[in-house]
Amino acid sequence: MKTFLIAIWTLVAPAAFAQTDFGSIDYLYGWQNTDGSYQTAIAIDLNPGWKTYWRVPGPAGIPPEFDWSASENILELRWSWPTPHVFHTNDMMSIGYSGTVIVPVTIVPENPSLPVNIDVQVSFGVCADICIPADARLAQRLSPTEPSERAVEIRAALADVPLTPQQAGIQNVTCQLAPSRKGFEITANMTFARDLTGSQQLVIEYRDPDIWIAAADTDWSGRELTGITELQYFGGGMLSVDRSRLRLTVIQDTRAIELFGCPSG
Image (cartoon, rainbow, N blue to C red; front, side, top):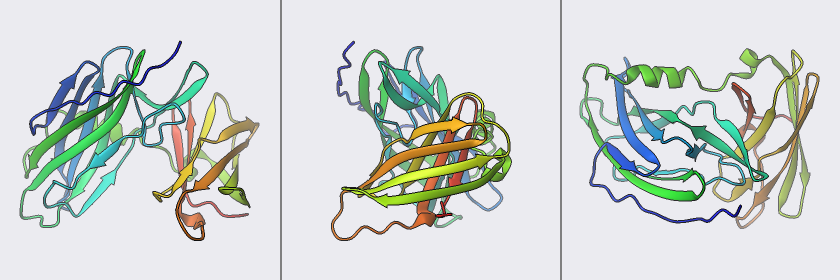
């Protein structure tokens, strides 16, 4: 079956909620934290048969993008992505979510004494029999109020974030970087405290708009996991990779594990 890419745009007046054929997208207020920050979330409620994508969507996915430039009184955004799932369709892999996905976003205001005006343009992909890039504009005014009725959903999403290496029993991790035609080939090796069961998918990220890293070819046996991928550089000048900025995520059947930094060993 061929997959056809059809572009649509969801044009909505500034609001916290937008609804389309694939389902709906909503901006949720949760509560105000003791440090003055606001716990909020972006919620995508998908109709049966539809899926959307994680921040690294895989070779068959569409990466989500968020433009917060029209918002006011925001000093910092802190994302907490819940554990994604790996999909295989027509021999193509993608990484994302089905059903309802709640992505928590902690908002740190510049001036805690003033309200925060949220105005975010969201561009994201959804797929059923076809894959559709969609746009939605979400707006909301944040000020101290009682926790919302959907706060329990945000708390559940926060509890579903990836485990740390210590929690997952990772005993050792190393990355070997070998020069390639467009950048570096990366070979990551991990040793776990217990034998690995089920499926494993390694994803390596590097926060730089001029760098792209494919989802790794991942193999595992016993307590050892190996992932091989290529870091490609599309910028000008010399490429220098700071190993401390490498972000590794292992996606398993029911959980994920996240690591920051990867030494040479």
